[in-house]
Amino acid sequence: MGGDGQVDLLVHAGPLPGFFETTSDGTWQTFKPYEVFPSFDLQDPNVRLVDLTGDGRSDALMTQAFAALSASPGARAYYDQLRARGAGHNAALRQLANRLVGILHGCLKTRTRYDEATAWSHHSKTLAA
Image: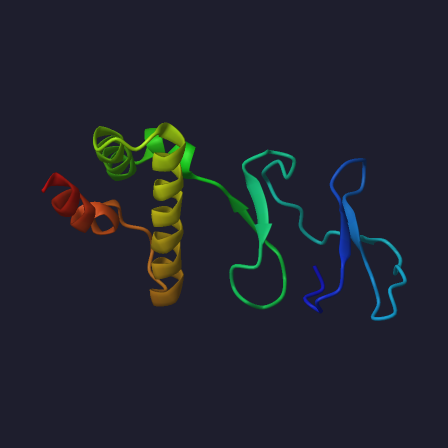
């Protein structure tokens, strides 16, 4: 949470969610309530805390591969084509998840919004061959 490389303890349950940070000598600081709490369930097994921006602070990432199967026609087509080529369900989901992370990285790098047609156009041509 602090972005200082030290261990933090996140508290998501109870009436006041927040966190404890540690100091460089390993002692715990006092509890700090979150200024803003996420609108999604941090206990969801699809949520991961990852430093996506490289600032040393955890960002919440919700794994989207399985959800994308029903929300994104391009993701569904990519998954179906992988399965048709013999990839098992889990392997196809992993490949889809890797592709979604690549798309997210591209959006963040170019500061552009996600576009379904742009994200999947080259895959539909490649996989159809």
